[in-house]
Amino acid sequence: MTTAAKRTEDKGLMERPPTREEIDSAAHAATAIAIAMELDGGLKISGEHGEAVKIAPAVGNLIIELLGHVSNGNMVTLVPVGTMLTTQEAADMLNISRPYLTKLLLRGDIKFEQVGSHRRVRIDELMRYRADKARKQESALADLARLGQEFDNE
Image (cartoon, rainbow, N blue to C red; front, side, top):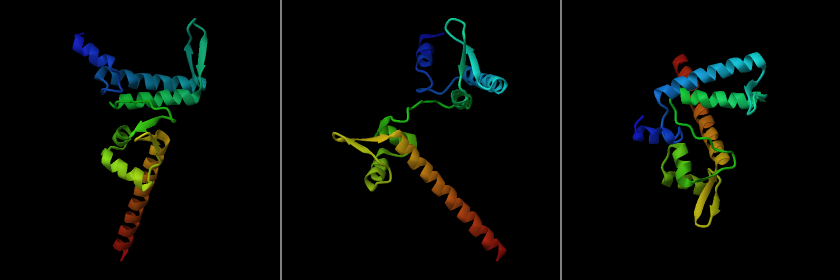
């Protein structure tokens, strides 16, 4: 392996998309873990000294979900719920510009905390905003579909 390839691999999947080999590996691992969990009601692995360690179903499902994202070729970042994001990080997660995010913050659409002269956004507030926005979009699409049906019936 070349030095450049090794440096790219060392960055991990938070900073680069997975390789074809990693995608295939993640897909096979997700399937194997799902089958093992179905058979055993959880995931059992060997611990440090060979003793059996049971991974709770909720944790196993989280692992499968993570592997699913990798097997779809996505870069992955794990963010703990209480994490505070910079405005740039929050804007990147919503795929919007930082100035537009700042407008949303100042308008009160997303709660934030002022830390000195900087604004910080809790990840759970950002996810709440994103879920609310998705719900509103789904509702608007349903209304459009209903109006289309009404129009067709006239």
